Image (cartoon, rainbow, N blue to C red; front, side):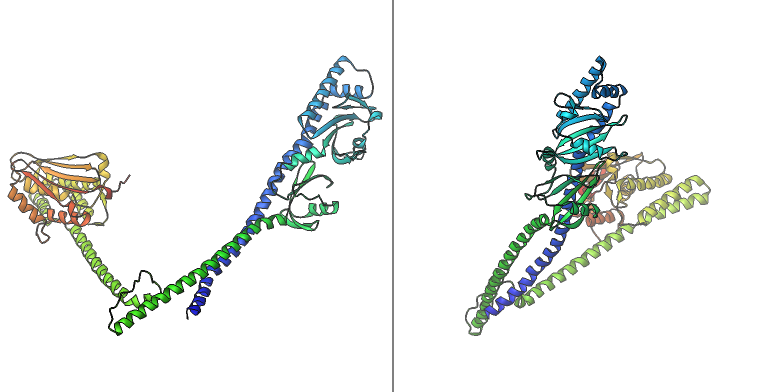
Length: 580
């Protein structure tokens, strides 16, 4: 029985763990091959870009300088007299020295160059950058440049050829017709040195780089493959007609070729497919290692799980057997067995979850009740304030003492207070909005009572952007006016203050009224903390503070008889959001 469950689990775990690994590997391999091909193209293009600069410097850089040297009419005349064995003046000698020095510096400045030859058509002599400088053609051992020059078409200005001298040494000749006279400038390029400079530009192992002239003739080839170059001219012409960035079969292999064309040369970069296969083979080896690890993990998990569960079932059977035979029952250690035993524990878990669900529903109902209460409290407005304000306006109109502008201002302030208090009551506001509402209320009260009181607001400007709930200040000021300043013969004063104390914001309203005794203060605190109290102002505000911020934010009252009364509260400053 244990073996049967073991093999079932092994198959299931294999499908769960190994099958997704194989699918993931297949997707990864597709992406890896695509990424590798893109990387090969990128490396090939990087090689071509670097090789273009190298070839431009080697093949085209000196031609411009040669044109500049032979572009001077006096220089051409002096060169003509020198090469045709005519007498030359002192000035010609100076030009000759300058020209030969420049040619020598060109050769010395470029390690791939061997020599430069300047020759005019049918002249018996030539000017060279090495040796004696003036050399008779009859004494020259290498006439490959002259043959290549004479093979050029009349309209052809530049020719690049690969030549081999009698000793078997291979060179690349750069032949350029002179612009202002009949002749040519010949540059000897050492193939081996050029190959060395190009070899340093290869970005990939096994990469091939070929430099061709404009006719498609192979000039030099470079590879770090460790194999001899094996492309014949037929295959090279096939590569020239192929589309860039495609796999082409040549010399018995598949190559990813890219091409770049310069002014007088063509570059071909080829990377064999085995280079990509070598890179992908690393992924294969990694996959095989992961597959072996997965198989080991699958077998281990299947064995450990089967062994653990059979032990757990044995403990449960033993428990029931002890109960049937009235032996002491040992409670199984479920911390060690957490699979099939879950069936047995379902009922216990169900009861636990059901109890939690009932508790959550009770808490949710309490929260909804508190939110509804907070909404109702927020929508309450003192009816006495509305009644007294409307009565004052009505009396002013009936007696004919009403000023239209003043009545309009009172209507505007009263409608602003109603709109502010009743629109989106649960939407938070900033302290500046509360102060604006308080100003409207004070303006209405001044219309009713005149200048019997003075209101001071003391707080930092940045605190006016603190987030609070609506109608927080008006009940405090109204309480000060009705209960604090009422009955005073002289002018009364009210101070509204706000200050930050660490992570708390303290708000207080102080009046210069009659104050109250300790007994009266305690009685007032009991009244405002009684949810069933008929008082609307302070009781409403106190309840909203407790529901919004907790009991620590309840109203506090401090009073000095016959001097002043201060009502204050604190709210968490961390819950206040800056509007800036």
